[in-house]
Image (cartoon, rainbow, N blue to C red; front, side):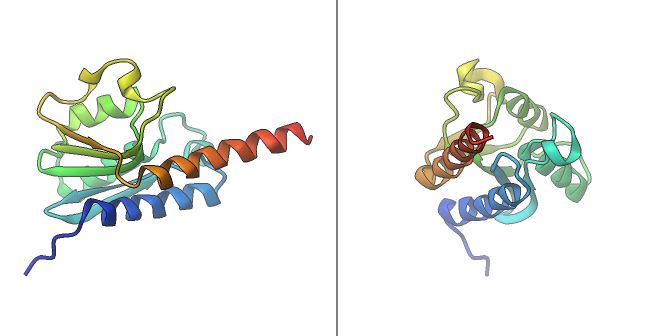
Length: 153
């Protein structure tokens, strides 16, 4: 018998990934990708560590999911990401044909919706606001601490 978990359960898993990024002094964004209600990949930001501007949480997870499934399309998959994907990640998710995107908090400055709602695949279902406060707070605190440490130098 398969256990059906809630969106909050999987967003908590994405938050665990965000905390891994935070421990590495990366922008704390994390995600997980599901296939058949099972996590098949995880990702968190690694842009500083890898010195790669494309090493966003979603990009890491998309690559890992494709490797797990043995193909480039994620048609029957669902991604949970703590912050709204940026335009680059939204486009990659569109190319992957992912079925559903669930994110915690909107990114008012760099989220894909600031450019266009149409960056994702037309059939992709989007849900937002899952554990929004926790997701938003993690990133807000990170940047607040960055600014504070800059001002004390």
